[in-house]
Amino acid sequence: MFNLFSKKPPANPNVKQDDAQTYRVRVRTRPHAEVVEFRFTKGAHIGVDDDGGYLYRKPVVSPQHFDRGELIVRFDRSYRVTATDGENVDFIPVSDWE
Image (cartoon, rainbow, N blue to C red; front, side, top):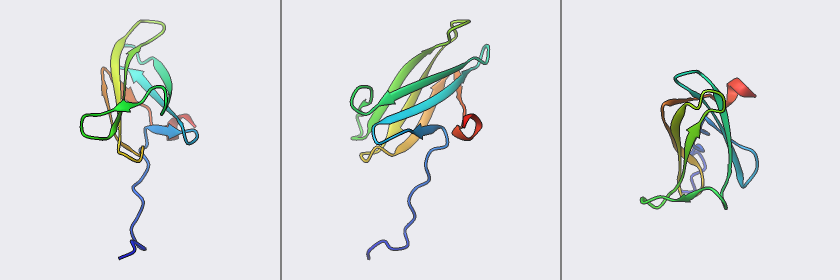
């Protein structure tokens, strides 16, 4: 009735929310295992997705070997992370870099 016992969905282990507007993600490229960090905000970087949620899509180019890939972070309408996908990259869990 009042959702007194409902649990809040767990936070995504791959995305860290620094404050109400800012998020951070770290990925490792598959060819040379270079770590690349991305910082993005709601107002400047996150766009509207076709399903009514929000989306952050970013090409990845590593600084030393120029490995290429792409990362995608999907949000629901309340800006809760619902999925993280990557092409040619692996996400580094927040617990590993804090």
